Amino acid sequence: MSYILVTGGAGFIGSHVVKELLRQGYQPVVYDNLQTGHRKAIGDAPFVKGDLADREKLKETLQSYPIQAVIHFAADCLVGESVENPVKYFKNNVRKGIHLIEIMEEVGINKIVFSSSAAVYGEPHEIPITEEHPCLPTNPYGETKWIFERVLQTLFKTGKMNSISLRYFNAAGADPEGELGEDHRPETHLIPMVFRAALNNSSVPILGTDYDTPDGTCIRDYIHVSDLSHAHLLALKKLEEGRFAGAYNLGNGNGYSVKEVIKVVSRVTGKRIGVIESARRPGDPSRLVASSAKIKRELGWAQKYPGLGTIIDTAWQWFCKHPEGYHD
Ligand code: UFG
Image 1 (cartoon, protein in one colour):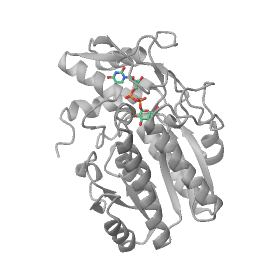
Image 2 (spheres, protein in one colour):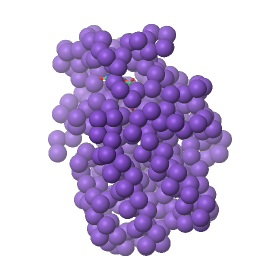
Image 3 (cartoon, rainbow, N blue to C red):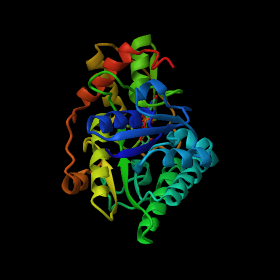
Image 4 (cartoon, rainbow, N blue to C red):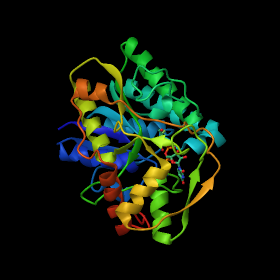
């Protein structure tokens, strides 16, 4: 059995990947400081409560299990917060990532799947965005992801590390079996914010109505978290084959505006949703839509849940059963 260290494995995407690893016969070992993750989201998988800054604990964890590769999620991931507090992002996403790499080198582990982001591209020149698009992030969060990708590219060139960076567009939805879902505190993501408004008969802010898009609101590409999870397993298998480094987009290929998302939520939930037209959120690009042709072609990735209605429906099922989140 292959042991895989999953940093940030108690988070939204991490916990879905842990479930998929178990399903496919891997043994995930979760390393998470539980600052934003949830212990209840990882079930019985071996768990170490630790921060990447704690080198001793990290090293001890990597030596206590026969770890063969790392999937690295642990990071801060809010665009707006990164604009307000960029140092926090450089510290947590870059410096602590380097700690991880350093210790992986010390114990002789040379495979890593890195949780990158569409935020590396910045304001796109072309839609859909392919991996050849220039990386010019427009916010510190995207900058930290791009810096770390370049660290990994350099370590590959020098023969030290094999890596796959997965550039997620907007992860959404929830485990179709209803065991896992999205529980961010504070919540800032669009779909759960709209759910909250639907459930509380309150209104959701639309952050910017003057973008250069057909209805003036931002366009994003929402991808089901289970489809995203599956891609991590394909990336691991690719790294198991031998020396490799690469970056892949992961999106749906369809862009939906904020107003369109609100309409679909309204249809799926059967609720009327009030909106407040508000100012733009600094750092938000107007339009992000992925081409995922490369990962389909090279790793054989395919989507099981491509429709926005299904993505929202799985998330809504979980949200209705867990209006207070994981309760931990
Ligand atoms: N939005 C609103 N109202 C809200 C919340 C969000 O109008 O209450 C808008 C945002 O301005 C944005 C869109 O809805 O235009 C989506 O916002 P999210 O916060 O749900 O997601 P982001 O696109 O900002 O960010 C997500 C991930 C990041 C990742 C990024 C890649 O959270 O980690 O996608 O583009 F970097």
